[in-house]
Image (tube, rainbow, N blue to C red; front, top):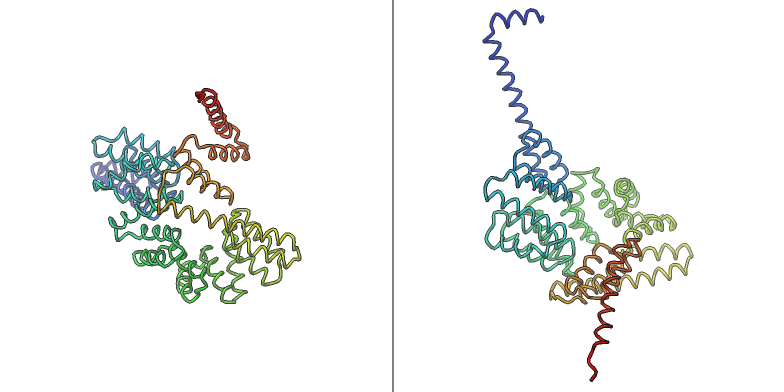
Length: 440
């Protein structure tokens, strides 16, 4: 066979060369087509929030296009959204070397600013970014999305609400800002009607937004409006019968409908994949109480409260579980804790709303929010607001003391000592001023 092929090549060398070239062109075209597919798939994944997938696909693109600034810039964005800031910075530094015109360099600098926002420096760069929006920058929607995300992450509802309003005006056909504005509205008001309006608008624009449809169903479940929750859950369950969060919410619905066996089947199937989902664990506890197994219910409730000591419904159900077991003293202590946590949460909600409606530069206001959040176990948010107090007044002693105590409790001595040193320096300064004060 090989001998015959060799003879054919020697007999028709030009024909053989042409066929070889055509074969190589075909292989190259096939490779290019596959890489082009990866590029398009990466863009789609990034648009849909699948950042890790987008980054993986872009890595494949860079094997073929290692000097493409566009690919590096998109990879930087995917890494930033995924929270891999070192990788994002590496891609952006590569972009700076590849950018061959001012417009491209501006795009890279914008991504650097957006990364700073996501890393927590929102106040330092917000003014510059909002000026870009005012000047109708081509990436205004991206800027507003990033600022909104940062403000929401730290419960800064009013600036988030403002950015989302601007984003909706700029891109009224985009579902995401309606979804996020609904989330903010839930926290700015006890009335969910406005939030539901935004969620429904988001679903009208994109019916496939599973988190939005789930949240709409959850709101109806929380208010025992089963006929309104059911169509959303049935649609989701028909599309995604094996998706654990869908199973969990459908299980909650079945429990509220009195279909206890079906509820257990769904909830127990879901908990294998969602072992820390608080509403799911709460309803499993309710199932155990229904079946007269209070000790098992207590296990689920303790797990919820370990993750979030401020979960009021879990605390309330725990009281019942302890009472049924005859542990009256523990039940009484849990009831007192429930009342204390409820009061603290109501106060923190009120303070956050006041801060949203009437923003101040008062360090005491930020400290009050952080102090309460620390008491109810919301450590990340508490640290943010305690540091906000120090941004407003770098010498605010209660914030330094709270941070010193917190870091000492975590064994982070270096951070604790930093704040204690600030306290000692302020005490020394105060004594010095007192000793050198003129005698009247």
